[in-house]
Length: 230
Ligand code: C5P
Figure: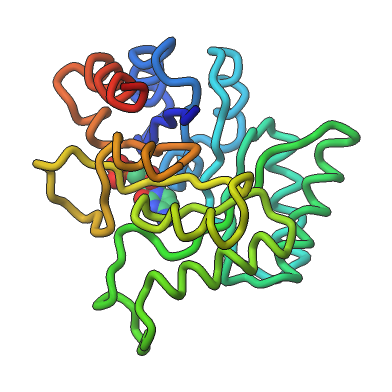
């Protein structure tokens, strides 16, 4: 069964908590990204956990292995249930991330480690070097490398989930941002609707503005969950 993650891209804790309160009981997860984390720091993770949410810490780690290991250890200690890092960081960075998780979790299971393949806001025109076999093929290569490095899953477009599951196995998790009702057009490019994402096998759907920018965010979230379940 797929789970909804609401992206809380807000400038401060107050606005984020107001929105979290509205979707509490509808979505099991919230996502803390760069904007909110830079404004409020890791304490915000604990506050969401106290509200009953699971927390996806989406800081997209990409650095030398030792630095990523430390960052994952800290985010794990701060209470993250899921953490993103870039697949492009390669095997040594992925292994270091797993070590950081093990150290931070101190014998517990620790958060899911999800590798960013290629951002869903990007299409071929946004990549500053030739991609002769297309973005889909690059995403697949990054996903396979991430699964071989022992990561839990990938962040990808809903368009790519089926091919990834075929190549990496159905237990390899897929988290898909770029979820849009058919009528919406913005900075996201490789988009699918909520039902398409679920049909294709996505385990987690990340939705931000279609919920947080709606006149009635709770109702927007409920409609998306209904579409996911229907
Ligand atoms: O508002 P919207 O639904 O586009 O939000 C999508 C969220 O998912 C944003 O917080 C963005 O940072 C994040 N994200 C993404 N593409 C990725 C990874 C994360 O859009 N590959």
